[in-house]
Amino acid sequence: MDLLALLTSPVADGFFQASMRLTVPIMLAALGGMIAERSGVLNIGLEGMMLAGAFTGFLVAYGTGNLWLGALAGMLAGAMLALILTFYTVVLTSNQVVVGIALNLLTVGATSFAYRAFFGMGTTQPRVDPFPTLQIPVLSDIPVLGPLLFEQTALVYVSLCAIPVIWFIVTRTTPGLAITAVGEHPEAAETLGISVARTRTLSLVASGLLAGLGGAFLSLSATGLFLDNMTAGRGYIALAILVLGRRHPLGVLLAAIIFGGADALQLRGQNMGIGLPYQFLVMLPYVLTIGVLIVFAGRTRDPAALGEPFKRARAD
Image 1: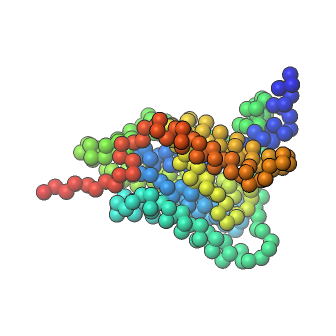
Image 2: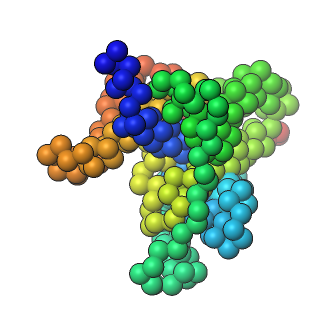
C-alpha cells in the first residue's frame, strides 16, 4: 500500500511525466540514427540536426503562432542538414565521422548567430506557448503508465505512434529490407539492382526528419523557448541509445526511457536540495551514456558496412 501511494503521489506523477518529455527528443533522434546506420551511414550529425530543428521550429512557431507548422519546419531543417551530410558522405565519400562533427559545430554557431539576428540582444527571452498536456480519460489514472504515457502532449503521442510505423517499414517492407541489404553488403545490393546511393540518401533524409522533430520537440513542447546549444549533447546520447537498443525501434524506446528517467531524476534532485553540487547531478545522464558504451558496445553487432564509403564499380 505504501508503494502504491508513493507511485501515485504528485511527486511521482511529475517525475514520470518529465521522464517521457525528456525521452521523446532522444528517442526520435535515435530512431533517425537507427535508420541511417542500418543503411551503413554513421550519422554523427544528429546533434546538429536536432539543434537546427529546435531553432527553426521555434522561429516558425513564434512567427506564425502555429506549433504544428513549427514542428514541420523543424523536420525540414533537419532534412536539409541531412542532405548536406549526404553530399559529403555519399556523393563525395568523405569520412562520415569528420563530416558529422563539422556539421554539429557549424550548426551551433549558425543557430546562435541566427537567433540574435532575428531576436536581437535584449534581455527579454522570446517564448511561445508550448503544446498543452492532453490527458486520456481512464488510461491516465493507471499508476506509473498513466502519467508516463497518457498525460502527455499531442507531439508525444505522435512520436510514440512512430515506433510501430518505423518497425513495420524497417522489418516488413521492401524498402526496409533494401536498407538492411545496403548496410550489410552494398556491393551485393548493387548487383541486385538496389541503388546504394539512393537508399542511403533516403535513409539520411528520414534520419534528418526525425532528428529535426526531436529538436523541435525541445523548443515547442518541452520548454517553449530556444536557448543556445539547447540540445546539450542529446544527439550524441542518441548514438549510445542505438547501441543499447540494438538498433531496433522497441529497444530504442526502452533505452531512451532509461536516459529520460535519468535526466528527469537529476532535474528533480536539483530541486529537492539533497546536498550534492548540481554539477554532479547534471553529469548523471552522460555518465550513464559512458557506462552503456563500456558495457554494451562489444556485445552488439554493427551493420557490416557501417561507416564504410561505397564507390560504385565502373564497367571496363
